[in-house]
Length: 205
Image 1 (tube, rainbow, N blue to C red):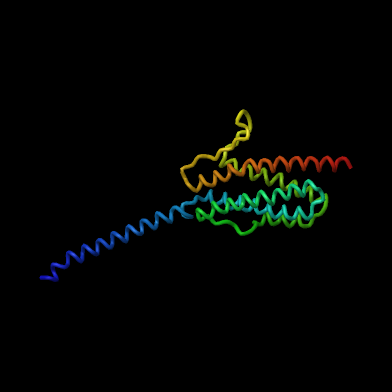
Image 2 (cartoon, rainbow, N blue to C red; image 1 turned 180 degrees about the vertical axis):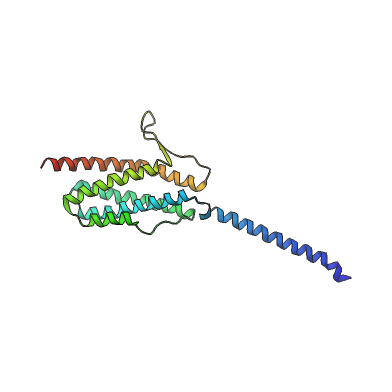
């Protein structure tokens, strides 16, 4: 009789254990969903593309500081190394917080550009490097503007705001984009100015 009386107790304990196990699994799944599993493909692509773009600016900048003939180009290259190193570190911090993988090196397209420039020197290097800087910064600005709105006219000229999002990962990346957009715009303006100056020098010869 005592064994029969213990059966309901044993059953209740087993049921309680099963329910607790299910609750733990649900909690684990919810926690995992707030890290890398919750990141969209668009967010992953954005981090990868902008990380590679930033690394390219830093590596080419270091090369230009050694190979460029123009003092202006060397000063621009120094700015690229400093600004893009800082922006890249900040993007990596956002990626780490949300378990987003970051590339360790350049992709083939940017590696080919680096190889091409490594075979040039002097004025020819200056020209091709600045051409690459204009094109590269135009591409980056296009990507940043998908996540931040930039007021280019009126009383609020220069104001940049991140696109609103309820997704914490997307919101963090949008805030980063809004922060670096003005600096990237300045880089493009400077690259164009140097590009035009190099063209005038070449035409005057």
